[in-house]
Length: 134
Length: 134
Figure (cartoon, rainbow over the protein chains, first blue to last red):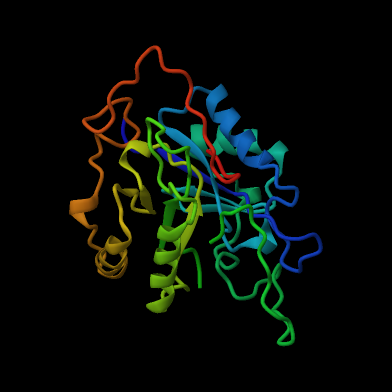
């Protein structure tokens, strides 16, 4: 045993319905993280892989967002039905799932095709994460 | 802008007082994550570094625990007064803080000098994280 071969971080941040940025876990159920965790367990990978909940990854417009380290591969718009493919292809076979990857130009970008520049009139966006922010 | 150069994950998991495994955020205040976040902001590193809260990293006996990716460097027993040094040395200068690093043999280990094997009589440990587990 040693450091994890792969560490999957699944954003579980929740914002109010209708928030302009959207959020990764609108119903606060953490279902996506649970699915990753159960898939890792089912495949008996827990000694080398961890699926972790995390606070806001700040890629909200692309959510639900997942980042896999140490690769630094970001996925966006991840659905429950994508989990098996990500684990099978990326975690087991070492091949990231290209169709779900966020382009490098979208990650941590002030604006991108999915994230229009905010209106100068808009105030700061409240965050109602369940106690885990940032 | 692009993927973060460094992504700092700070465990904010809370367990009940006296829990045998301990936990990383006993008073549920998230103060350690806040300190990392404010230090990153103060140094104007937010475009390339993110300090994220996360659920249980499962290295509880070494907590408060922090992991820095993509390096995969784990820190244990991190105190508020250590944050400046970690940011200065590791994040700015690229030199991990050796005195705080968890040895590879301690990370994800069933037992280590800091983590005695659990008693076979002990039941499963409850987790009272503020909604973010795993």
